[in-house]
Length: 224
Image (cartoon, rainbow, N blue to C red; front, side, top):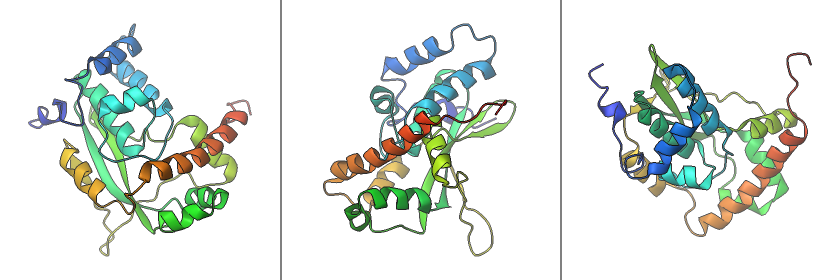
């Protein structure tokens, strides 16, 4: 692929060149692996296992690794960074999805004044995934950790994210080698900016309650 170089480069937010902890983590996670696909599976499981939480959009990969949690954007960015350390071409997919109303309503019901501060439940929201090139482009969505997803399942919240199509029926997907400019612009469009970390903390408390529900009631295995 002629674009391989772009999909292997560090950027300001995909900062594996400036923080050695990312490469160190990849080395630790992939020890003993016999193939590139096995190495990727290890880092993908690691990133997916990090707790999901609401935060800013313009978060460096090293910061997500240091904190040990992130939003869809932060976790996708970390997975891109770790994939590029493995010399696996990786890129970002950004598109609009229907708002996860059941989740947002659950958060608001637990703390009703959040509804006004969040501006109610929007119709649509941005979502980010990662794509890696392993015998063709493969899409990965590491945003939800297993306990959180199982908690949503227990609450009866739909797990599928539904892309929003335009009037022509086509889903507009933005494919990027870098999210530096996109994340900066998206951060400027935040509906709430003042005291946002206090708001994030309160929303994330509710997300943690959902996660704890999933932790207490793990998904049934293949034998039921």
